[in-house]
Length: 299
Image (tube, rainbow, N blue to C red; front, side, top):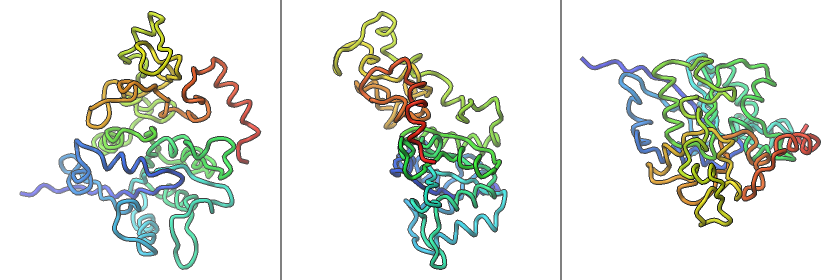
């Protein structure tokens, strides 16, 4: 007797982003993207992706209508995946998803509409999770994280953040699989930034192969030197992710393994707080950031 497969409808919408998160997902190896989209991601459970503008064949009003119909036909039964931050300036006109009946459909309005009806929301990438590069000071488009936007709109829905610029494909697929296997994560499963502790629970610094150089006070003076990269701008001591253990490109390598520094891309406002990228972080960086850029932030 054929096992009944439970369908989990999902829609993926993208706002202020570079599509790097989508590209990362397409590069997933185990399972590969074909398995994710066409096969049960685990026995008896399958994600039915109804909308993803980057990879779907359709275009124009018919596919935008799919978004609206999903909210109307499946309230409380679908997962909303959001890539990119939500531009709120000029009533959202900095980012549109298409047109319906001659009217522009903004990212701002569609996130509001779909999030209010979704079973849960998953923010894919640092732009969606924390505002990302589009929200960097002075932020003229009013780009916001999904979390801040939903709070502003008083929409209370379960939310999981999967930050990274882009996030590792395993982080995306394992987060989705965790929801399908165990249901929505509880408070003890997420950190204060709404990230799964199983992925973002340890410091890069704690598992860095150059940690011994740091402890011994041996710091590289230029890239290519032996030694810790902290003086060259490594943000590993402030960044939580499992990159040193998981590696990228199907386990081939990772930033520090390739001789580069960690830029802290899974952390909020890394583009502002951790800048300049190739300089040692200043002790007062966090306080100075919020003081110096408060007047520059979009209002």
